[in-house]
Length: 362
Ligand SMILES: NC(=O)c1ccc[n+]([C@@H]2O[C@H](COP(=O)([O-])OP(=O)(O)OC[C@H]3O[C@@H](n4cnc5c(N)ncnc54)[C@H](O)[C@@H]3O)[C@@H](O)[C@H]2O)c1
Image (tube, rainbow, N blue to C red; front, side, top):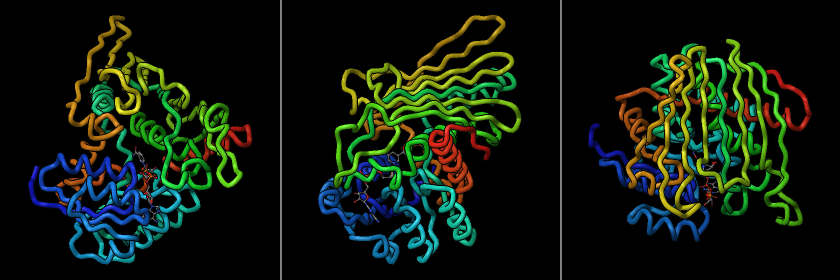
């Protein structure tokens, strides 16, 4: 890895921005030079997290600066489209955009047209790809351990949505809906694991348990807190997502099982210690051939410093290592705008399927 210094500017300075700051601090040759956020409380926290960074009020002020080599968009979902247009109006620089890149497919089509002339790397931050247990699962599958894949199950059992600045995440109009907002990660993993494209989504879900006693300007949150989504892929494989956001007691937060004609590979990922207490738990990978039917389980160790630097099992660090190489011209963009938009489209189809009670064709 080269140690040439990359100077980052962050647009949005809330919780996830501080995860980016903490992880960039672990990567030699990285500096955060400016953070744009209109919220003074968040900027006070950022003054401590990134001492010396210029604290700016809006994206335009950041885009106008010349001391920034790469931009990270980490503002709320519904602001991404506007913020990206402001970024595109400035000097082309490598760009990392938080998921979901936009909140719906219509915005996505407009963004794709605008981005077509953006000459710098544009990477969508779907970092679950880079969790070490997920990377280990992908490596096994690529090596042929399970044979031709037929089924993929992703289960997330976790804590409710956290409180956000201005409570933006309580409403579908801001987030794109739970299937877009957080499940875009899992729809992205489906495409990545199966190396195929989805053709149909059938989902069932509800807003049944969480946030029922909350009111914002007299409105109750409308975001789903549990769902099943079944996705058919062009090549005949099928995938299923099970999401439950009132299951923070689960030992593992995510469990992913890929089953092929010759065996199955699974990984299990604990949730962030910061949000559950107790002791650190190890992620696991399980390799289960059909013949001999003798499953092997082993731990997937992750440096505790990386676990402490965020809520995503070290993945933000590994994503930044790869983004850095792309930004310096030493590697490809691994999560493209097209990947980001397809994950949004799958999430939007799942939301539509739930709302209408029917399968949605992609
Ligand atoms: N990759 C992941 O796993 C992951 C995890 C958490 C959040 N995220 C994404 O990161 C983004 C931010 O989420 P968060 O958890 O930090 O939310 P947050 O509410 O903690 O922070 C968002 C910040 O953006 C600021 N902001 C609002 N409008 C802005 C604008 N137009 N320009 C600049 N700043 C603006 C707010 O004042 C706030 O400080 C969201 O898109 C979210 O989906 C991704």
